Image (cartoon, rainbow, N blue to C red):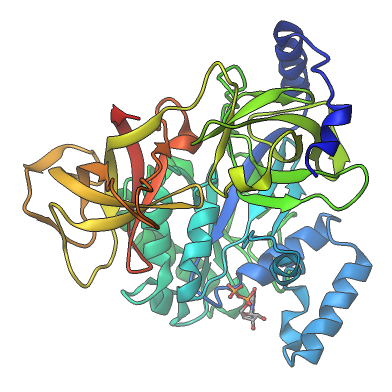
Length: 470
Ligand code: GDP
């Protein structure tokens, strides 16, 4: 029945030059957007902090707060009353949606920040990763109460792993919420202790301290979130809000060709939003209602009937925006999570082999040359081979430590060559589809990768060179 939708296929209303001019004007005058991933050990207070911050900023209305409070009480967790109310994943899953990350916004004086949630439990790391792979900056929440920071920072804790992971994915801006400062016995010395424990680890992991802000605060008490607090007379740094406001928004590469990797594909239900719905964050370029787009990998194309952004329909949308498009002239079977929509005359390169700079996580078995792993890129899983281990690198400076290493072990940074395993996968004659990829330098969003083995993330990194194209 997708043919029925073709009766009212719209045409693009603005020529490219005009469109780019309008986008430029809007991006210059409008509030700058930034994607923030929230990371940290389980129970560090991430949900509570974000709930309280949203409430203080008026983003969470009183009713939502009360509903949330009631829900938490029913669940026997009254202390969770501030917990972030916006985890819609259960409901979304019922609708057949596969987004695992609840997103919402906070407005600082100069930024519109999209929050990418990151549940703290160890088995939620895959969700955190999908969030981190879209992040421009990270908010790390650590627990300043006695012994808790240490528990989250030791080897089994998630603090280190999360930091290493976001850095590996190219995130260099960091705000560190030194949370639950209300529980610290001597807040000032506890804060200083945490700063001096974390700093060397951050440098070792490739962060630059001038791009890191440490903010002592309490999510539950609302201390130092928006206004300076008399509870911390010794502290003269920024509040959480001003530290977030000082983050540098990323460039929005809207003049590059469109790249829209799909995080979701579904069937439109309402009369307006009928046809095939797809959503994702625009990595680069601009899309306009009426545009014909190529779907990669594959040979299909489709026309954009309707664009939805922030629950409103829009004539166009540009790089950095999360959008839902309703498409005409295509069958749902041609669209996959991980497919990339592009202009027909500027398709994204499809790689069969490439080099990447990766960081290896905590592993049982080291990674050897020739190892079979899965490449995870924009929600797409592809079987690959670690075809060459080129060099291990210094994590802070990227200088070569050792050429042609035999194996890679946990914590190492390395340059490797990755080759797609071609041949049969799901059936005879069916070949592995190449991956739509670009280098991190050309397109940040298209150049971040993860490697998994047996369902576990073993490495994360960025694409440095495309070697063989399909
Ligand atoms: P998450 O797992 O990181 O999302 O942590 P939660 O937000 O669920 O908080 C974990 C626990 O710490 C809950 O019992 C909260 O009530 C408590 N908590 C969170 N923030 C604070 C704080 O600033 N001070 C104190 N005293 N407790 C807090």
